[in-house]
Length: 130
Image (cartoon, rainbow, N blue to C red):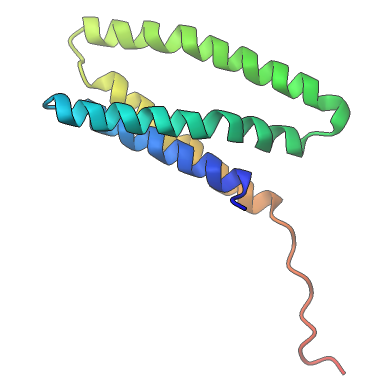
């Protein structure tokens, strides 16, 4: 079984790499690869992230966590296209994709830090005790 944190990291990596590819698209084949990678990355990321977040919450807080996460996703789906459209309109044609890739990389780094923080402690070693 692949754990939630591995799936979240894979989704973030796929999304970030695809956005970096989109920044330098030179033709339709490269566009198809980048968009397919983006679709797969987000398809893996969203349900895995929901699962990982709800598992960390107490049962009575899970509804609040899901509601907050859904609200933030909705806000991002409104703000991101507006910002990207503005960047493209200002002739910063690849900046929106690099910004998205950077956000994905930052989320990946933060997730790695949090994964270490919440990792179960290793059991004490029984070596040398008799």
